[in-house]
Length: 139
Image 1 (cartoon, rainbow, N blue to C red):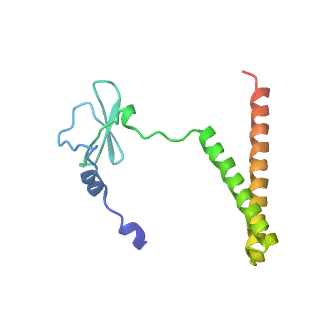
Image 2: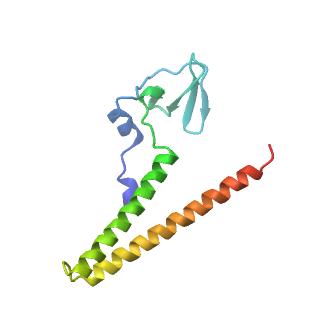
Image 3: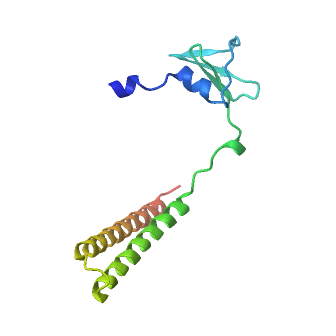
């Protein structure tokens, strides 16, 4: 409960964020729902006002941060699995050549690579199953 009470208030957050402007007057076309007030703008995209705090302006699409796509995320996942495999192979090679005597670390890295690879295979299988299910759907 202490963690929740130590959070900043909405008005503090609005003061800290330069993208949000506070206005004191509300147009006559406002709609109140709970603690929020919805105000249609001239461009017919609604603005939102919170009980006496101010208007939250819309952010232009060019100003938004773009999230990585599914392909990028999956590519990073595969590269991470590959990296784990390479680290495991290097640890095993070092152990065999006598450069390292840490058997425990080599076994742990090998198991990590094995689990990561099995996870990747399962994710691939689920994706293939999902694709097949989508192809069977009638539109």
